[in-house]
Each structure stands twice: as structure tokens, then as C-alpha cells.
Amino acid sequence: MKFKLIYPRWEKLEGQTIFNLPPHGPVVMAADLPDWVEIDFTDENVDELVIDESPDFVGISMMLTTQVKRGWAIADQYRKMGKKVIFGGISTMLHAEETMAHGDAVFLGEVEGRMAQVFEDFRKNELKKVYNFMAKPPDMRLIGPARRSILNTDRYYHKGFRMVDLFHASRGCIYDCYPCAVRYLGGRGFRPRPIDRVVEELEQLDNNRLFIVDNSLALDTQWEKELFRAMIPLKKKWCSHTIEAKDEILDLAAQAGAWYVYQAVFDTSDYIRNRIRQYHDYGIGVEGTILLGLDNQTEDDIKRLIDFLLEIDLDLAEFTVLAPFPHTKAYADLIKQNRIFDHDWDHYNAGKVVYHPKHMTAERLQELYNYAWDTFYRDEPQTMKMFNLITQVINKEMNDGTYQPRRRDLIDYSFGKELSKMENN
Image (tube, rainbow, N blue to C red; front, side, top):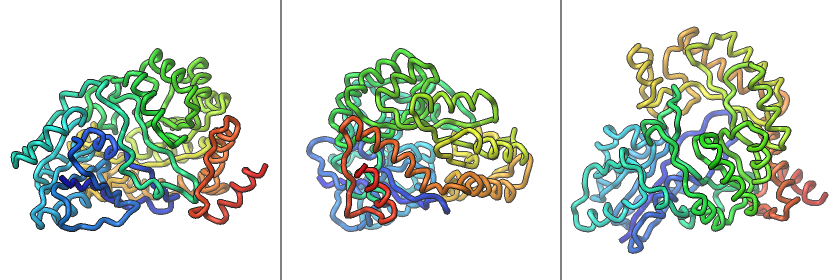
């Protein structure tokens, strides 16, 4: 049976450095497919999608709200041809009711141990409209290595530099943050993968560079230490969301290959300043993540925050405006207060203001978002700051003998000259 799996394209944010990372959801889903299923995968962000009669069954994996309208359009085309379509992924769960109108089935929840039944139902022409496992997470031991062989690896280079592969060591989160839908998607709780299963997957990865996509690695200190100790011999280089700012943890993280972390910068306190310094003390870079447009922010607060960022030696900064995604507290509040004025899901990309802020107009918040990007990268462009981070990881790799030469046929000339200088030194 031929199964066509599609990851829809989405519009990237204007003015930001464009690169593509290999998607995670499709390779996790593909790992649970029965052996008798022949899979053909297209990431529409890097390859052209050809819609034809060849597949028996079509799957659309959607992670972002900004993908859903494109995903629906693709499904509509296939269904006009008489093909059955199943949807899955994070944004399928967030937009399940709307998505049902465009598919023959929607899969809600985590896939491990469940795909065989779905495909058997399809083969028997007994496909259910909804497969809902959101309240029944799988046994974490069932999560094996993702099936990255479906990816066209050559497409995930940036100026000749191989980008990170996505990987997860745990699921879930113990918190319930205002703009976040994780509690709805996976329940409020921390579900770590057994360390031996984590190591099994990491040993199979041919890419030395990883993005550990867990919501946070700072949810269980003992597990966190065990994870980093197990990773040390593997010599991977990785970035992640928050890790604990404890000396023992940071030391283990650095030994385990921590390259840089995403750190939320939510105020101008000494706590934030010291935390950035502490990461740097252990040779770990920091990309600040800054959310603009919360109800406790005035225009002066935002300007002070941007000034503060220029003082604390961030390696990179990523600015977003609050995007009220369905099934978040933010969405519930703003809907109740009748403050959302734009319901076009294409605009829910965290770069466009779709609601009325509390202390300024929507237009002014959009201007401040643009001002934040322009101001932070005024003296050193984003591409140069990215190159500095890349330099850090290449130096780490060269020191421990894991450096993989770049793809010279894909290299950008100016970028390549700088990399060549490093390699020749």
C-alpha cells in the first residue's frame, strides 16, 4: 500500500533569516507505520508537492496553526480525486473540528502503538472519522527511534552548514503557561523517556547536531542529570529549551554537548541577567525568547526590555507577539473579552498582531515588534550572530574530533569564506 505523507508549507516571517529544519512529527509518526506500508514523504517547505493519483492513502501532518489552511487545501484536492485523507499533528489537535470538514479521518494524540489499527481499518474500508487518544498517552518505552530515512537530508542545509535534527527525550510539562497549549495537548505532567531508549536513538543519528525539542529539560533534576551523563560519551552538540541553572546541572550539560539554550526573557531583573551570565560561564550560548504584547506590558516596558537585551550579552534573540492559539488561556480570555479581530489562521505566526492589546493599539504593538528586531540586530545582523553560534559549535566539534565537513556544493560564498578560515586555522 502506498501512503503519501505531507508536511504543508507555511509563510516565513518577513525580514528574518530563512532556514528549514527537518520536521519532527512526520518522522515520529512514520516510525509506527506497519511494515507493509510504503511511505512517500514530502516536506513542502523544501520540495515541490506533486498531487497525482499514485497514493492509495494520504496523510497530512500539521504542527503549526499557520499550516492548517494549506493542509486543508491539499486534502481537498486529493479528496476530489477520490483519495482518502487522514490528518494528524499538533495543529490538527488544536483545530480538530474545522479539520474534520476536510479529511476522512483525524488522528488526535500520540501515535505509538496505534498506527497498525488505523491502517488496518483503512485496508478494510472501515476508517473511523476520529481516532482520539489525547487522554491515553502511550507507554513511554514504546517510543523508539524516529524514522528519519524518509527525509531528503540534503534539503536541510543553511549556506552549506548542516542544520540540527529534531529529537525528544521527554513529553509533557508540569506547568500551564498563559500562551501555551501543551496541557491541552498532552496533559499536565512530565513523561520522560527511559534513558536507554534515548541513548538508542541518539546512537543511530548520523547528525552530530540536535535540537532537543522537549518543552523543558528542567522538570526532574535526577532524570536531567542521568540524561546528561548518558549523553556525554555520544559527543553530540545540542540546543534546547530551559535547563536548570544549577552549577552541577550546567557542568553536566556542558560536558554532554550543550551548545545553546532558549531562555525566556520576561523582565529586566538581576535574575535574568545572572542566569545569562551563568550559562555563559559554562560555555553555553543563549538565545533569548521575548514575548511582546502581554497585558502587563506598556509601550515603555517593551522599550526598556529591548534596551536591557542589549546589555546582557545574548547570542541571539527571537521576538514574538502573543498569538492566541486555540485551547490556551490566552485564547479563552481574549475571546471572552471580544479582543480578537483577526481569525485568519495564516496570520497566527507569532509575528502578526491579531488582537487588541491592553495598553496600546494593535498597530503600535506591530510597530514595536518590528522595532525590537531592528534595534537588537542593528549593530550586528542576525546572520552574523548566527554565524558566531555556528563558529562555537564547529570549534567544539573540532576539539573532540566530531566535525563533519560542510556541503561545499551548497555553500554560500561569503559564509563559506569565513568557515574556510576556521577550518584552515
